[in-house]
Length: 239
Image (cartoon, rainbow, N blue to C red; front, top):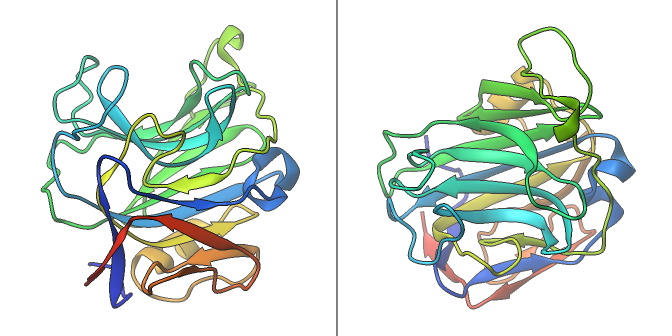
């Protein structure tokens, strides 16, 4: 199902994005847990302004030398054969390779809405598609399944930085083409049933909700009243 908001913010894939000033509640190390959800509607299979092996960052917190977390979507054709894969990663501050969770999305149809939720706690990342759990990965430590373990040489220690949160890009190196709506942040791990409710247009948990950008008006107002977003040339479209 599509988002319930009457409109959404459309990004052109080249220069448009929204920016939210850095705040402690957007950083995993200061909260101990982070849940971020959003509706996205990719307009294309292959994004015109992609980077590295062929992907774009459609939301995240970090700059090139001060990285924290990010959502990524790959082009249908990319050097890693990750056809339209959607990922949620956490990083060391210096960046380079992070650890995160993903789901493959080979059946992506441009113009269709997808609800994506990324979750991180003190050891693991999780990702959900349309309210349904997809994968869990440990970015530090080891443990029993279902979370995937990595060699200790690859473990990540997230660090809180001063970079803003950006929607439609992360650090201006790649840009998302399509619509984004109903971006929400919680300072805790939401349960499976809570995530399913949000994706299904039901109850939005208020416990731990630190920011909510519905992106359905001509300013990107945070409905919690705490933060605001600066929109850089995005266009509002009716749902």
